[in-house]
Amino acid sequence: MNNFFKKENLRYAVIGSGSWATALVKLVLNNHKPVRWFVRDNELIDHIQKRGHNPYYLPTVDFEPSELIMSSDINEVVSGADVLIFCIPSAYFMNEVDKLTVALDGKFVISAIKGILADDNLTIAEYFKMKRSVPFDRIGVVSGPSHAEEIAMERLTYLTLTSKHIDVARAMCDIFSCNYVKTVPGTDIYGVEYAAVLKNVYAVAAGICHGLSYGDNFMSVLITNCFNEMREFLHASHPDKSRITSTSAYLGDLLVTCYSQYSRNRTFGNMIGRGITVQSAQIEMNMVAEGYYGAKAIYELNQKFKLNMPIAEAVYKILHEHKYPAYVIKQLADTLQ
Image (cartoon, rainbow, N blue to C red; front, side):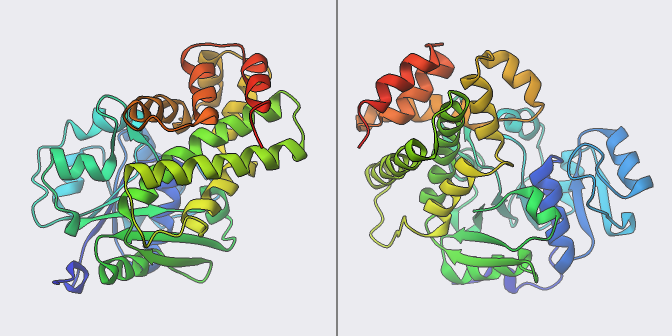
């Protein structure tokens, strides 16, 4: 198999300017310079070029502006790169990618988006394969467990890099690894993408329960059941005998997203549990909680599989059917073991 990353002088681009995109720019710059960076706000580009940091996300991360090639034109950034790392929240993904007219022939696409596209319930890898004709040979996925904030502080972090072929996944590891980021290669593209969607839904559930004053004892039971639901969904939707769901890309990412103070999905759920409306919580967050969109997607996808997923269904009812959180969680708690 021809390994794309054996080519010399590959050019790298990050598409997006939020906290995770900012963290990934920091990581890629450790190993490859310059990095092309799509930032849709020209005022933000000017600020980063003049002051060397993103004032809205991870402002403590310092950049050397001469190492960045920035543009608000997605076609300009994409045309000048060979490896494209997409890191736009799924809710805004189509707004930006619809503007993309440059052909992706001969380019390698990496998704660092932990969400799903609402209209078609496609993962990002599925979108690029089905809608943009990028073969899985040239698609990769970045998964956790990780938070952008800890990468900014250079705390020890583990990333899983997934592609169809293990040697390509290993080559992807070299893009992001450094003294504080350890990387693990894998080949379960579908599994890690759907696990990322599910763990965000379950982090919203954990946040709701925390906002309702449920304690650690209950939370341990909740997350155990979340893991079981995730495992069953992955097995039913995309069976893979080699998948080990107890590893960090699955269980680890679930745990960190449900428990961490940096988890925006847990924070979002906590606000809902404390009585803030969904709309008000979204406005106050000022960041996308992917679990909101993921809850609807998983609910709709499960109409095909008809799996018993009471936790995911409870989150759907609270967020999209506007059911009373305390009542829904009380009903849920009576079913958990």
